[in-house]
Image 1: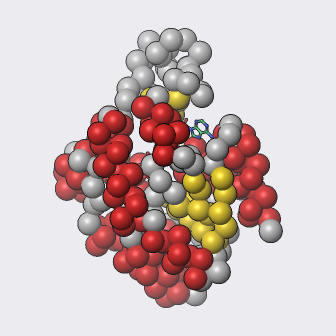
Image 2 (image 1 turned 90 degrees about the horizontal axis):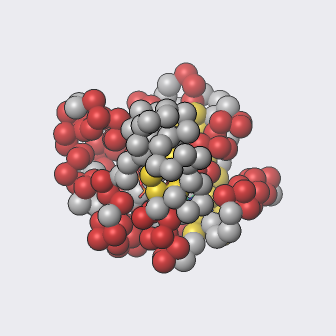
Length: 215
Ligand code: AP5
């Protein structure tokens, strides 16, 4: 299965993508994670991406397309992958179609997740992660067991992502509306879109996601 998870910041693409990829042994290709790794390791890619990410803007299409082209050709992605955060523009969606076509493959489904704006802002302002293992928490919906420490790394304080400050979140939502939301119609036009409401618990959303994949 080759699957795209589409939706605004905070809708749960990472949360649901990790789970569905893990349970089905599909590769998880999260472009945001790849960029953050690049920043942490001080690579050229990280250097190029950092300022734009911190401002809530998209990284240029050619950089992202090159990254996904290489990652999606890796061995672990041969039997399937979940794309979280890519494509984000029509240019990227066209490039994905062409790269799969060149490999005689195709995208199976694009899942469009959505939830009310204020819920997205609430989720993102409560998101925290462990700086060591990157395990994701939410102070409201998925808090750590012990105050502000990672469950798996006692004593390690959880941190907030640089781009999760409220003004940057609002900018990211604006960028989503302008540049990424048109992909809903793009995939609807291809007959590949399945829309899933991302309100309710993580478990509820996961159930709906599985249902959408089986129809
Ligand atoms: P990226 O990391 O992809 O960020 P994003 O799309 O803004 O998405 P988020 O990671 O913020 O949210 P999510 O939908 O994954 O939600 P999550 O599961 O974490 O990209 C970051 C930046 O990188 C971009 O702004 C851009 O600059 C650059 N970039 C990346 N890809 C690019 C591309 N293709 N082209 C150009 N630039 C690119 O959940 C959020 C929180 O809510 C968590 O705390 C979670 O625990 C909680 N939560 C999840 N589900 C629920 C639920 N059902 N109920 C309650 N809480 C929930």
